[in-house]
Length: 287
Image 1 (cartoon, one colour):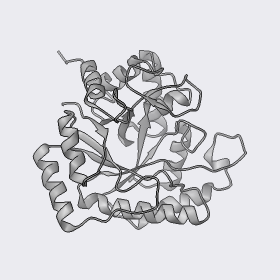
Image 2 (cartoon, one colour):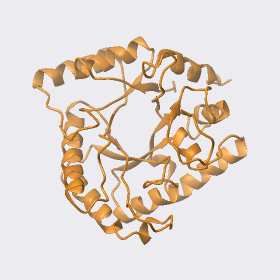
Image 3 (tube, one colour):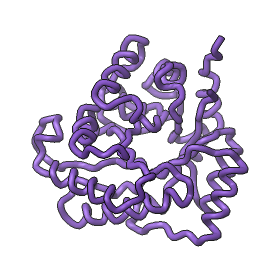
């Protein structure tokens, strides 16, 4: 099994440009926004756009591909933001299968609650979150995945127990998880030793199921562990520790999961070949 290592890249000039760009960087999987992440504007693609994308995807052999949902989404919001979040995700999850894209990676949102409890089930807006997720899933194609990302700040998903509660309470097999190494680090997870990594994967498997881990964001962090700040750094340049990336890439339970970088780039122009190469160098050939 060869490793899947890719990056989040720009769709400027057309969705297919991101495919050509990841090929140049010698990655083989991809993450893209479907539209600007900072507005509610949704993507519109012509039949021609779609066929060009699928044709390039096959000829360049880029797979899997994920959407990253817009930053404005808050599925725990009881008002207009919640409604807009539903519509945006239904649109994106409906577009995904047309482009042979797995689904959308989503920052679930925030309860905006002063209550310090780390359980979702204690939060006043938790029923809103569950209801909104169910509406999204009920109104989008069965083959598209809703992939919830862990949080590196005080938002929903700061600890994997929160993601486990959501998965259990929604009870729909289309929900998957994206783990981000920077966010895990920010939230205080220490994955630096073989023991701590195995222990974490055991915990994840027990609470969520390792088969539900769809993708891992490989990002270093500019901040110290447990700081609850989400600032990405290039691989090996931050505080996460190269061992953590090594564990994900070589552990038998995680090595076949797609890895996506969202690093600033060594020239500050976004995720680059150099970051991908650093990860590739960690791969231990099996004897």
